[in-house]
Every structure is written in C-alpha cells, then in structure tokens.
Length: 311
Ligand SMILES: [Zn+2]
Image (cartoon, rainbow, N blue to C red; front, side, top):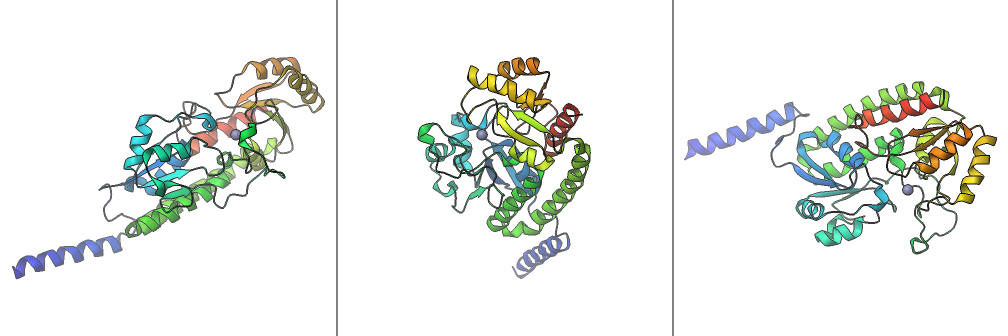
C-alpha cells in the first residue's frame, strides 16, 4: 500500500516537474480540449492560433455569406449547448447571435458574462454615429463600424482578448497560451511590415466600396473611402444614387470599386464599365475564397488585390 502511494506521489511530482520544465507544452495537450464556438471564421482562427491543441473550435457563419444576415442551423445550437466558451464580434454585427444563445440555453455566453469573449473589447472604433440610430428603422452599424477584423493591427487586440479568457478559464495551461500568442503576434508583426510595403502605392488614393465594411482596411492602408454603392448600410442602391456615384467616381479619379463575393455584382460592374474603374474582390472573412484559409493568407490575398488594382 505504502509502495503504491509512493509511486503515485512520485509520478505526480514527475508530471508536475515536466510541465514546469516544458512550460510551453500543455499539461494535457489534446486531452479534453476546451470546446469553443465562434461566430465567424476570423475569430475561430484567432482562437486556434492561441489555443492550438487545447481547443476544439467551431464557427457559426459560413464565410461565403453576409455575416449581418446569417440563419443559424440546428447543428449550431447543438454545438453551443456543448461548448465551454463563446466568441463574438460585439457591437451589432451578428444580430442573430442572441436568439441563437437563447435557443441553446446558455446565458453564460451572453456579452459581458464569464464565458463570452467580445472581440470588440479594446478596438478603436471607427464611424461611431454622432446621433442615436435605431435597428427598428432599418439601421445597422448603430454602435460604430463593426467590420474591425479587416485591419491586421486589430487582430493583435483580438488575440489579447482570447488569451485573457483562455487563461482565466484554464489557468493550468496559461503559459502554453501565452507562448502561442507571443509566437503568433511576432509572425503577425513581420507580416504587417511586409503588407505595408506591398501596399505603399495605396496611401492617399480613394476607393469606392459596396458596403461600409472597408473603413478599418482603408485606415490600415491610408486609403480614402467616403462613398458606397449602398446609400445606407444594408440598403441596395437606387438608380438616382448610382447616377450620383458615376459623377463622383469620375470627378475623384477612383480606380477601384471593392466588394466581397456575396453582394450582387451588377451595379458595381455597370458603374465600373461606365467610368473605366475595376471591380476588386476583397474578402471579409477567412475562407471566403479558395486560398484564404488562414489569417495570413486572408490578408495576403486582400492586400495583393488592392495593391495590384491601384498601381
Ligand atoms: Zn456591415
């Protein structure tokens, strides 16, 4: 009996010492990973970068659809019911999220609660309205522009939000998460320098965007974006608005009309033809197009697209 107890104690001590010595290796790598559901692929990718094999991550919004208007499926409800943590955009980007959490019966996943990561925490918001807007009147972006994932500098803030929450719910593996975050940020910083260099030709130029989802992308590159094909976020263009844009694009020598894959292209293509501009695809989320399957290839694709269009 004594011998058995001694052996158990000895093996526990050895395990603990191994964890201390190899502080970047999780004590239970791959065993019972934390189940995380993220609303979007950008967030699930950030969680995976920090949690690696300590997390099993799923996402709700398929990247080939407009994230404002997703219809979650019964499998999303089931995934959330089983999850340990929920990650969302905050603000009003995912108006479908609250009813999804209600259906799953997970009050601890609501914003501000202990098992929620609000990725907008700490982000410097752009286009915050100077007067109160109302969803009841069809307005979206009522708290400011929620498309902050388009600037890689903001990905660093998202990574910090994820790190803090993983450490608080799984403190035994805090040093593992910290080491992963450090390596990720270091690679991201190198790529940011590369992207700035690639897009040096963009600074000061003006683009036209379909939806108001380009502010943070434009801010990162020093681009100007003041007019949109949608006269108001979520509202399709009228013939009168398109006439105005035709004059505006000509007068301001705009070379590129940018849009993701999921908006109708007709209006942009007709306008581009009339004014001699190009329609450029800029992805809004990871996996929207083949070859944009992780954070780095997503930004590589977008920055190559805009740099090429504005040469
Ligand atoms: Zn939007």
